[in-house]
Amino acid sequence: MQENQIVFKNVSFRYQEDQPWVLKNVSFSIQSDEWVAILGHNGSGKSTIAKLMNGLLFPDQGEIFVHGIEVTPETIWDVRAKVGMVFQNPDNQFVGTTVRDDVAFGLENRGVDRLVMIKRIKESLEAVSMEDYLLHEPHRLSGGQKQRVAIAGVLAIQPDLIILDEATAMLDPRGRKEIISTVNNLRVETRVNLVTITHDLNEIVDADRVIVMNEGEVWIETSPRELFAKETELRTIGLDVPFVAKVTNRLKDTVEFSEQPLRQKELIDTLWTFHSQT
Amino acid sequence: MDISFTDVSHIYQQNSPFEYHALKDLSFSIPSGKFVAIVGHTGSGKSTLIQHLNGLLRPTKGTIEIGDYRLIAGEKPKEIKGLRKKVGVVFQYPEHQLFEETIAKDIAFGPKNFGATDEEIAERIPEVMRAVNLSETLLERSPFDLSGGQMRRVAIAGVLAMNPEVLVLDEPTAGLDPKGQQEIMDMFYQLHHDKGLTTILVTHSMEDALKYAEHVIILEGGRKHLEGDVGEVFTQKQTLKEVQLDVPEVIQFLMDLDERMGIRIPYEKQTIDVLSNQIKQHLKARR
Ligand SMILES: Nc1ncnc2c1ncn2[C@@H]1O[C@H](COP(=O)(O)OP(=O)(O)OP(=O)(O)O)[C@@H](O)[C@H]1O
Ligand SMILES: Nc1ncnc2c1ncn2[C@@H]1O[C@H](COP(=O)(O)OP(=O)(O)OP(=O)(O)O)[C@@H](O)[C@H]1O
Ligand SMILES: [Mg+2]
Ligand SMILES: [Mg+2]
Image 1 (spheres, rainbow over the protein chains, first blue to last red):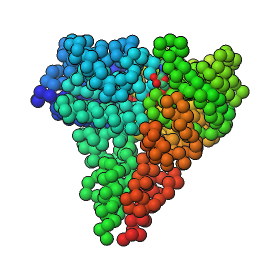
Image 2: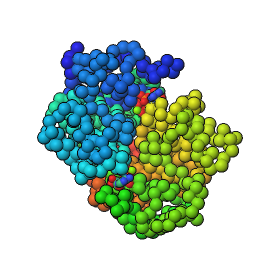
Image 3: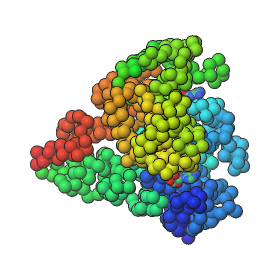
Image 4: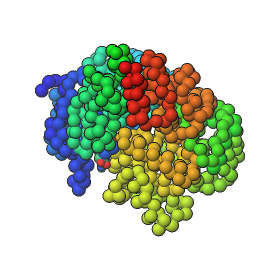
């Protein structure tokens, strides 16, 4: 096993003994500096996976490794030092009474030097366009502003593994694109693992790999391109494909696609070529 | 119910160092039975606006009329309970509206508070659970021991159980899976249609605004930037860009098809199947 991997080995989990299994024999691994998106219907187990990665929950069966450390009650502090996670509802994770204190909290916890801290607070809030809100109360922000601040908190601590659990669900499409590309650039520069959990099909087009969950099991692990060709199957498990893929899949009987397009530009380029060939 | 805002401003934490002007001189009116979308960039004032519709927030300046109810700056509103009975609000974060020990009690809370009998409530619970596609086996579970999307569904079920006349939805599909997003929006639309509701949808999905609403109001910095018929507003790329919004994906695609290939297909709310056939016909005609 490599140092910088995240590994799930035959993990099963249920919240209570008298309740059904929420994860069933889940195995996958995430390479260092890889961006993996996790998709799946409501209740398919995505947030549970995120909480297991961070030692907020522990598997009933199987093992989980984060950068070589097995996640157990004894190692959670070592694990959490490596992981930065944004929860589905940011209200659950605010601790500071101002935006500045909130971002500072994670840095103080990690014993970051004061001067470095000031710099990182500034940079991370700028990265999410919230630098004008330093002294605002996190709980009195708009829905999207809360998500931006929660993301800044994670960027500031520069973790080895970033987990975003529907962390951009309240942002407008443009804001979503900007924030995701900021995080992704950071991943490329600093070689961190990035795990994004989302229902936004356009958000995953740049991911290296997609893990699709269905009823607590891994349904498929694949690339976005290959996934988007499986429209009919995805619909049977409550999912769908983005607009570009839908149009593409319906044109396949007329137009030849050398590969599944991910963006509008790729689709129109193919149509243009097809139509100028004659 | 007819809704109108006249010169409405809202200032949070007035006369404190944190004073914030979230709405500025806002005027518009929504006739009874309309489906209206409110869109705008993060922090533009959408949630602030809709929280005035059931009197959760009061105007700092101006007047709001909702049917026979009036909210006037500086005056204590009368009959706020009557207003809340008629205006059902689905909040942006479901956690903000869930609080009971069990899902069943949570859904029952609204109707009970507004005088529904136990029998009526017992009838409505399975109906609304079905409408949001949740299994009745969950009824005795705590609403907080659920996944994010399941919590969203419970919050929606609670509002449906009140049988409101005005449906106010603040990002109701955030957290739902793709199938759920479509089913729940279709369900709202059906309800809007069948019961003649007045529906106000706050959304970041330009696609949903285009698909379900008749009229759209764009907010920017607490002011009204633009309002109009969805078809007209959502083709104005430049105006939308000024407030950091984009035209819906399908409109952008049709614009690019026209610009790059001279293929001109008007947007008429056609399904993807129909749209794809139109593209095929254009491609074949050229060969
Ligand atoms: N605290 C809890 N106690 C008991 N059951 C829970 C708890 N949290 C989640 N569950 C159940 O575990 C299953 C998986 O939940 P999880 O939150 O992992 O789903 P998810 O894939 O993140 O869904 P969503 O897309 O709705 O956020 C669901 O059936 C849910 O009801
Ligand atoms: N309770 C509050 N106290 C002080 N300021 C607030 C409060 N709630 C919101 N604001 C501020 O008012 C402005 C409008 O917020 P609002 O929640 O209405 O925005 P929104 O359009 O719903 O945004 P989003 O799309 O992010 O949900 C924001 O700048 C926000 O910071
Ligand atoms: Mg979840
Ligand atoms: Mg809002």
